Image (cartoon, rainbow, N blue to C red; front, side):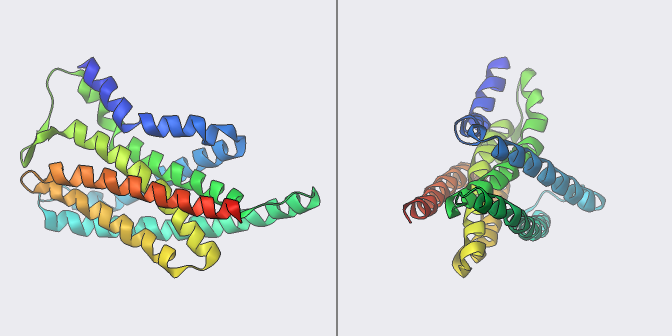
Length: 238
């Protein structure tokens, strides 16, 4: 129904849109970087889906899907490192321009760029895994996973969009800070937490698993947001 359509949009996409308007949209460069990042990650997701196209349909069990998730996360983490290399190369002319104009390009400014890269990553997942099937909610009735009838497939998708928007945006900030500071804890935390969060979605194959998995993912996303804010706060007070 229409009310379900708008309710799911507000839940799955509303916080991300509000964040874009309040934080990203204030700086035109961050807007462009976010759009470029979203396009890049959409291409990565399309290429990844094309790679696994020959293996579908998979048996609806945790085993086959866990292998696909591990491989997908490995691809995305490899691309994340490539994004960091591009990010670092981009910083060199920007820092030169800042010095020429007698301005300081601070560590906080670098994290803002990481934030834009991460926002694009989260937005691409929202489009690919949630927004693409959202028009189906305008029909009568809904769809449920037989293993977890407590939540509709659309509600699970909305919570996935919300949680992974928080998780992927925060992990980009954490990973980039790790690369800049040579902090191995932050460098390793990004792929480990990304893989862990992705594997949590496999609980949807268990009876009632979505009731535990989706709130846990949202809570993890909020914790990572708080941690990323702490990193930014420390950079700002230096």
